[in-house]
Image (cartoon, rainbow, N blue to C red):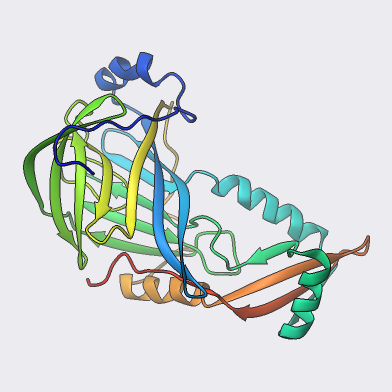
Length: 285
C-alpha cells in the first residue's frame, strides 16, 4: 500500500450501480451493505496459500451484521447432500482414501476444510457491544454466543487514499496482539467496518495487519431494504472468547473426505488430519 494517494481499480461485480448510487448511499444511510474480500495467509503441507472469502457487512443506524456472503448457498447444498445419504460409513484408512482419490481424482464432499466462514458477528455501535454467533461442527444452527464489550483504539494519520471512489484517511491500531492499518471514509459517516473493526468517524473500507497475513478489502456497496438477525434465541449458549477459539481450533483439526456410491447413496467419509494450518487473527485477549 502506498503512503500517499492511491486508487483501487475494481470491477464492481457485486455492485454495478455503485457510482450512480454513491450520493444516495451517503445521504440515506439507513440500510446498506459493504462487500469485503477477506484474505488470510495459511500453510498447507508446508506451502503458503491464500484463503479468500467474500464477506458482507449489513449496516443500519445502530447495528451491523458481518457474515459470509455465500453461507446460505453452501448450507442449502449441504442439506441436499445430507438428504441423499441413505447410509454413512466413517473410516480412517488412509491407504483406502488414496485408492479412492486415484480413481476419482477428488472427493465428492469434504467436511472440515473450512470452505468459507460460518460464524456471524453482530455489532451494536451504541452499546459498543460485539456478539459472535457460532456453530458446532455437526449442526447448521447457531448454538453458541460470545458477548464482548470493546472498541479498538485508533491513531488517525494524515495520509489519504481513494477506495471505491471514496476519499479515505489512514489509521493504525494494536488490537488483540496484532498491529493493523485501516483506511476509513468520512463520506460514509457510519462508525463501522469489517469484522471487529470500528470506532472511527467513518466507514472502514480497508484493513491489513502489519505482517500482511490478514486483509479486508471493500469491493462493492449495495443498498438494501433491511438487515435480519436474531440474537435472543434461548437455546444459544453463552461462551467465552477463549472457549470460542478452542471450538474453532477443534473444528479445523480434522478433514473428512466423502465419496458417494451409486443409486443407493452409500457414503464413505475418511477422517484425516487437516493439512492446512490456519493463523490466529486474535493472539491475545
